[in-house]
Image 1 (cartoon, rainbow, N blue to C red):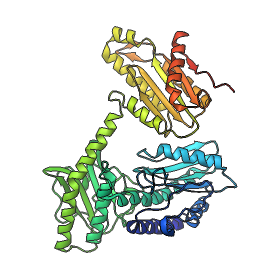
Image 2: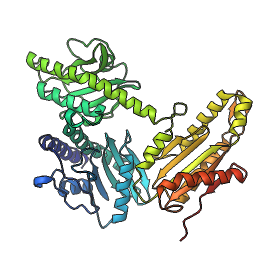
Image 3: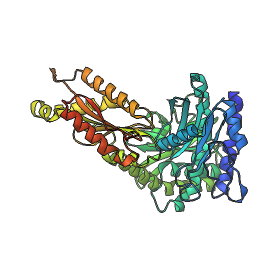
Image 4: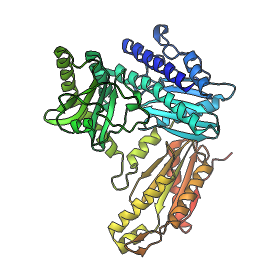
Length: 478
């Protein structure tokens, strides 16, 4: 069944990409029961039959395909297609899943979450999400097989968003690294008739950011071995004139290795190396005219890729705390502002007697203590949760979809973990404790904009009651 699924989904992804290149928009809609959604003119890109086949092949309770933001055909359209088994999944639970996918669409990697009514697995790329909900208790092997098929479905969604926008379609906003990489990979494949991959060098290493239609979609976003040939070319080394057998050495399990030698072409922005393009040619050589067109496409893409990488890094830095690596206040506010569901819990955390620690042990010790607290917070967040440092010694945990009781349990576990960590600075023991305030929507407020003020008030009540404790905001009457 798994092999058959790969064959079918490969054809589905290819058909999806082929149709999308020739059309402007695809149908957008949102339904918990799988009602058909058609594009203008009656075009149907993901039929109910296709989604139902995928759902049944894995025994899933539902399948979701969430299009990248900016690709929906009209303001307010979600770009979400779904098909769920109405006999096994209620509309309310389907809506819970849909909301959860909106929360994870900006993540850079997929995940698996154990919900009370099943195991939700999802893969993300540039705002697109492909997901399946398997029954509770599904074995690991079944989850991994379903994730493989979700990657194939995601590939079609991600390519659609990147290919449809085009440079002129992104004039009002910064192009993404992946949108440039995907378009360049497709240009190279079309000109040379060989599968292509685009790698970009960034501060964190070399990564694949574009794979053409004939390539292995699992390579998308793969980190590349710094000793591989393509990584060396992407960072400024000369390309081997005769090509190489396996230039990638990417950390992708069971990936398909193309046959034949691979030609590597550097991507430059002026004198600066930006990345490299790998193309597996069907023959030993390519027409010079086609190679000239490819070089021109690469030359045009180089400065845009450099700008996109720099923008991506600036956005990441602007939303991150440089000391702890957690989200900062801006990052937390941005995440909470996207909250559109009925449920979510906020936990505010403040280290007790932090000024005394700084005055006694010095600011270097204070910084080390903050990093220690950040590490503990990371241990207690799931995919989609956000841990943030919002002030000097102030932290927060945002838990979308979590009930008030769940947030209280998380706060209690963090408090106990902090107390039990027995932190030391230069062989001197220092007891670290913190005060916690918890608020939740809808239990303590009907408006999520009030969550921060309520959690802060509860936190200061904990301080006033003796510190090292968890306090909860007052519940909404009734």
